[in-house]
Image (tube, rainbow over all chains, first blue to last red):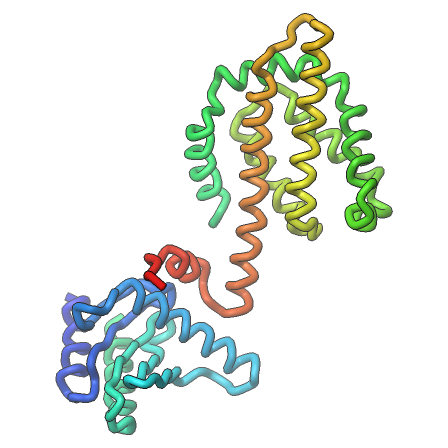
Length: 120
Length: 186
């Protein structure tokens, strides 16, 4: 039941914006809790890398006295990857097109992360 | 990787290298006549290490204590009792090496020197036609030393993972998940 609810949060997030290509909720140990990824994406790889990036982001923010981590954003030639905490033990990973309106994506992703955190 | 995981991997290792009851029995035979030579083996072992300036510098001021520890360890190796607690002791020895920051290179060199010293003793005994000399003891002893080194090495591996975890904030299961990811071409 909880799994389905988390899955529906991800489908709503992906369906609500044409800019969002894929998303997943991952435990801080890198295990996938729920995902709405394209068939070309390896769930285990996405999960482990997203959790690793979030951990590194947190540690870097702490080491450099930037306070609690809010998000990690990675920008590449083909778009963005956004990582946001979904509660203390999970990460929402959002894969975004390069033409995206980031303000809207941030807003939608933050709402989805809160919704997912409430379910975990 | 906790001690339980290490012991599980170790059981697989033991089966692979064939460290079975027959080999352990050969070790008990070897132990009988190698035990009186432990002091001599320990002295030669440290003479070899002290011949190298880098290891000599590392060992400076610790030799007498280390000789006692080494003596006890070799006696344990030759004791003929190879139960689970024997192998758990090897894990603890590994942790002590890590705590004392013994470079992995020194550890590997030490094992290599020790193998040669012990095999030389067995070879000499065989040449002198000593009674109870077991021609296959060297192989059995080699297997046991490999097993001890395997367990001690795991402590170094564990230490490196702990350091990565501490530096990056990544949990050990996450690091393990990253290590286990399938390799991609290129």
